[in-house]
Length: 115
Image (cartoon, rainbow, N blue to C red):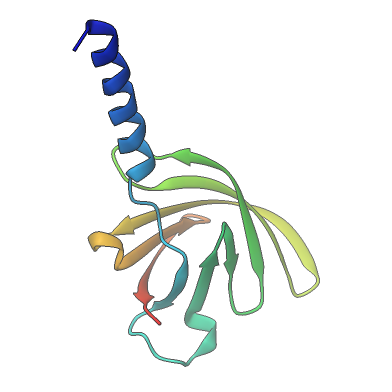
């Protein structure tokens, strides 16, 4: 292989590694064990939209968090007749089984609930 081809191959591998890094997967998450209740402990992530019990946040401006597989987002949120902006971090842990959310100085660990 020529040096130019090696450089292109290295760039392709690096690009693949960055896109293959684990982000929090779409799905249903719950504080504690996966059950159907209480509903207020459940959050759903679908295509950069977090749906909580009585509010919804659309996530934008994903920024990688150095040293983790997580990302920092700006959440444009609405619920109960109010609108607000929230800075959030979502970090996958334990191979994606846990979604750690940091928001408003608080840490929440949600369990992934398949199905």
